[in-house]
Amino acid sequence: MSVYTQLTDDQFAAFCQSFGVSFVRAIPITQGIKNSNWFIQTTDDVDGAYSYVLTLFEERPPADIEKMAVILNQLDGKLPVAAPLAVTDSDAGTNSNKRYVIHYENKAITLVPCLAGSHPEQTTQAMCHDIGAALAMLHETLQALQPAEQYGVPLYPWADVRDREMQFMPGDEAKLMSDIWRSYTELPLTTLPNGLCHLDMFADNTLWNLQKGEERLTGLLDFTEVSVEHYVMDIAITINDFCTTWGMAEQGESVNFDRSKMAAFLQGYESKRSLGIDEKRALPVMLAKAAVIFWLLRLNVIHYNRTEGRTGDNIMVKNPDLMKRLAAYHWAHVEKSQNTVFVLSRTTSDNQIVGVFSSIRQAEQAREKLSNSSEFAIKEYTLDQLS
Image (cartoon, rainbow, N blue to C red):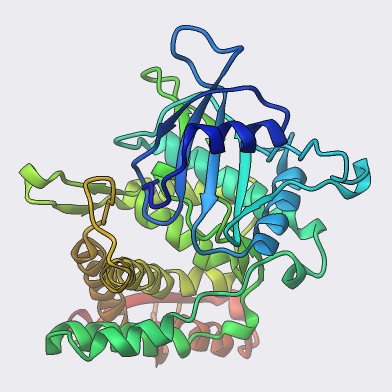
């Protein structure tokens, strides 16, 4: 994660001492776009190794980071997470009231143990299966924290960013964003299960033992965005990154979505938590909306860097155009499905057509009203096929 705030060695030493850690060296971590992060070497580390990551949260208030510490402790032991160390000051509190955050210029600082493993440059179907299972376990485990709203941070007002950015977009891009957003609002959102969600489970927020053919998940990172959201949105966000191959600059920054990886992810997810019918039906639109959110996020980072005057080689900005192209890919699949009809017909030899419906739900409801519903089948056709 990019380094925005510069600290001296004396400051690092003082912060680490507050957590009971003896400081030797801080090594900037340049990946990411939101917080300032460093690997911390201690007196116990040898051969240039490092044991901890110190994070200075540039935007989130300390109260939000305290909530994150509770969430990580809830997951600890069930998933590979790095729970923040407790402050060792004499006034830090009892075991039941530990303090995990120290303050610097109204910003929060935490120190967490390093997790083993590496960020994957590419994913496999097996890795997609495993991260799907891990995400389902996260959703299930965090249900114990109630009321959920008390632990999650507020969702970011992306509609405000949308309204600001759409003023400067070409017409086709603005229409794409508007169409996806409208389709999202038309989903049966009140019927979709929700709870505490990670909302940023990209591959670069995970660590793996990458021994070929035996890839194993060793770490889940960056819990700063945990909020109450529909589980299927969290699923869509994770699928969008894990199931997409992002081409490097020399490859034209291609965007290649792999539907077989998505199938593996969903199989892994449902090995821990079953998806409801409404969740499955909402997923295509959620995939497009999730891509729009990260399209807006990257535009917002560019806007924020510009207004704050942030410059330098240690500031990394991800290309928003990649998420725009992924949104367009998913929206094309949604539009194709909107040109689909569902034909309810008798399965006997006469194959009598009972009705043609615009949604599978309508067809299923019609079949349930028939006296011998088992004698009727629903088949999906495009309008061209039907004609």
